[in-house]
Amino acid sequence: MSLTAFLTGGTGFVGANLARELLADGWSVRALARTGSDRRNLENLALEIVDGSLGDAHLANAMHGCDALFHVAAHYSLFRADRDAVIAANVEGTRNVLAAARTAGVPKTVYTSSVAAIGVKSGSVADESYQSAPENLIGAYKRSKYLAEREAVSAAASGQFVTIVNPTTPIGPWDRKPTPTGEILVRLLTGAIPAIVDTGLNFVDVRAVARGHIQAYDKGRSGERYILGGDNLTLRTFLARAAAIAGVSAPKIAIPHWLPLGVAWLDETFSPKIGRTPSVPIDGVKMSREAMYYRSDKAATDLNFSSGDLETAIADAISWFKNNGYAK
Image 1 (tube, rainbow, N blue to C red):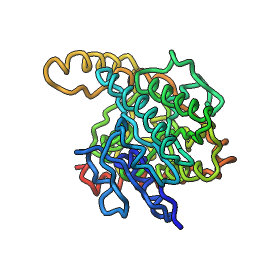
Image 2: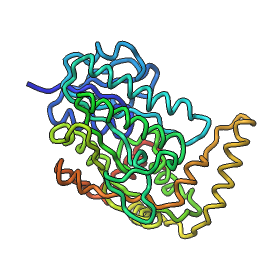
Image 3: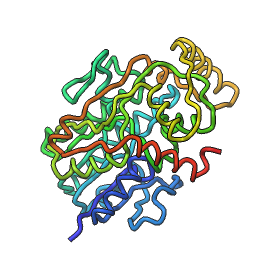
Image 4: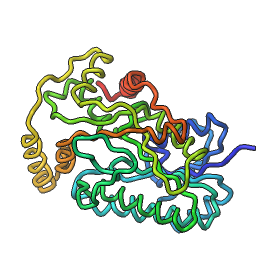
């Protein structure tokens, strides 16, 4: 008899890949999607779409009979004008979704947090035991993920089975929005990156992240967090690899952080006044001042997690962007 998953965030990047992994494993999937949302990532999949949002009162009814809740949905924005919406979706939405799962008697929940909630271990590589002071987390998004993770930990402490996964920077297909890293790849493909800042990230195949969610359901412990990551690379190295795969030139010029910070301040301050949407977030530039490196030893040991091959992930992401009209 197949298991049934209730999935939030299925229309997004990680969620769309998780939906495919679940279906491939024989799960039945109920995917929550907001009315009017872009559902192309779920087209032609043999799953049930549930109309609704994270704050809906009827979510418990929709979850009845499910064996697992995979709460992947989050509102991602680094722009300061979106602070209230980010907090509402990520903190209040998580609280409501967890409460609905309790009411519905869902046996296990896998909550998708982020390494954003953990923060940066300056000059070193962070694991699950590290936690930046909340006041040092840059921007509303990082703070919202920290607070949402506290909701998950609190629910687990109260007896609800909640396992937490913390993806790093996923790369791969179905990045429809796209994510900030996906946007960097698109800009690389279109020759729109004249220069870069010196920073570093942990990159991982999004399909490994999706598989890690299922492994967390199978083997994860309630109340524990598991980093789902891969390779720690400078942005320069990542773009050089991506450029070689795509057959384009990699950016070679590095600029000081004060320059994009000034551009971001002007953009966020004045663009809304003339009816334009800002494109460079202040908090995003601030985050890039330090390399954001992580390790996934705990997930490898406890969950049998494997990060996959990053070169394959980059190649598949590039192919997906080209095939879907992003790289004109």
